[in-house]
Image (tube, rainbow, N blue to C red):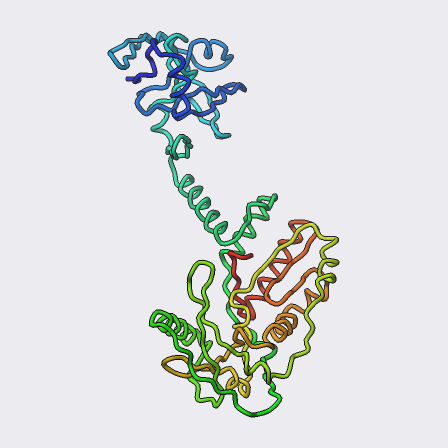
Amino acid sequence: KNGESTRTNVNKHDLHDNMKKKLLKTIEIQGKCYENCLVDSGSDINIISEEISAGFSTGKRINTSLTLSGLGNYKVKANSAITCEIIIDGRKYYNVKFYEVTKECMPFEIILGNDFLRTVTTVINRCSVWFMPKDEEWMCSLLCKENEDEVNNLCSTGHIKNTEVRKEVQQLVQNYQPHQIYESPIKMKIVLKDEVPVVQRPRRLSLKEQQEVEDQVNEWKRSGIVQVSHSEYCSPVTVARKKDGTARVCIDYRKINTKIVKDEFPLPLIDDCIDKLSDAKVFTCLDLKNGFFHLPVSEESIKYTSFVTHNGQYEFTRAPFGLSICPSYFMRFISVIFREYITKGWMIVYIDDIIITAKEEEEGLQRLQMTLQTAANYGLQINWKKS
């Protein structure tokens, strides 16, 4: 049974519109490609136009007396069949048997029916169709594609021309685990101009904001970023709104910032950074997640980070956002970790943004591997969505 594809009274204009919705594949036979080939699970057999198969120089042909029927019990005679090799999407299929019918009976050049479809695994997505071998290879292909999509959702790798380099980068992203084995090279030390405590009362927050603050503080406590405080210093909490409407819990350190002695570690000049980019052709950008929280606060300085909420007082064990010396101290921290690469001239660091330069993709991959290994050793978390 072949379905409506064997009918002769097909309106050509309707056929042209409907063909856009059909499952069509390009099939190569003996060096020639045929684009108008229908994938038809309603057909028990494979069918080919006699006009096409007559030009085949090889292939085993046998006589048959097969009668094909379609809609309306319309009957078509197939007096011969030919077995040959075909190529679809670069994959060869051997000993595929086609029954030959006259051109007038065929609105398509070739019809692939169940005789062929039973030998492969068919994957259909809307009007596209792919054939995979009937083994685990097709599943591996889908899993690899799924993993690639997952990595691309984390960070962009589609622009990498070298496929081997792209796969290596995807593996690096997937397997990155910041297992800290080295202690932080420095700790943030806060020096005040005087020892008169800065004390502020908690600000009034709505019930919704109170819950948001409590959730954030609990998350910080679980991560070891804050701890309960009994400090004579305390700054108030405020809630700001991100562009997506979610809450950002902030500490208002403006008063204590006026008493902090500035850290003089210099931030790099933008012009110098641009000069370092001039000879490179490949750039890898990394963004550190919750950058300042990687930097520990010295024991004697923790009390100065204290803040007060509606239900308690806490203090940071890691550098908080809002203190005036955090950017320069964090710059010092990152510069010490990546000093070797910065000195060699192929890494640029600006606070929590890292740029790795290279002349070729292979060189860029090698330098990325070195950077990620160092970052993992110091427990640096990377925001892949911004990288």
